[in-house]
Image (cartoon, rainbow, N blue to C red; front, side, top):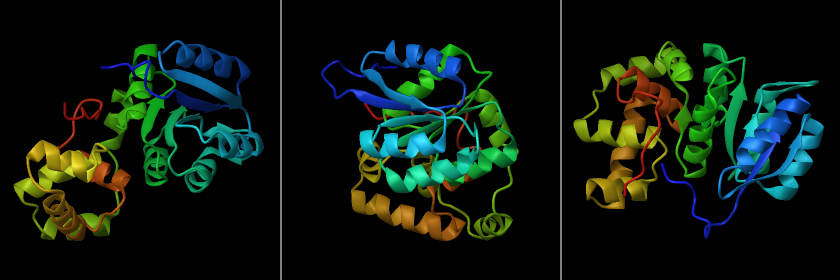
Length: 230
């Protein structure tokens, strides 16, 4: 996996966790990666929103259990405040229900606090490169989720073509339509048509929902980390 080039813009990171020592440790890990810099860490939502609004970070590392606020609610607020910021959920409270909620709210990565430092670094590198990353433990939990039963029923009635499944797999892993088109050797217009048809068939429109649906169809495996076309 490539570490961002020193010539590339610095990846700005904000940490939101109510444990001071953990924030300091995460800061050390993040700052040790070439091209990454922690521009601030905070412990509450009241501190997080002004900081993120001012810094517009590329990445936010967010714990879900915060003093006097909900991490999921904060995730949704961050999505409105700085929509281009990508969020890594780093939490010890990743039940299947919580996983489903944070994916629907727009998280790009979920890493359990039981993960190794290697997994944590992999998540940082993947998400900074525009990909998704779910640690193996989280991927296993995702496979047990049941998303919108009505949507699944509708999807079962409309069989996806092989090419639609391929496009779904790439979309679920965070690829853009242009990247999919380049990989498959087709036009962006063709990819847009496939995307429109598969969303109509599945009834799903969010990338997070597509990720869950793709897992249930067995289209994604391992840590669900996508490799960009080279």
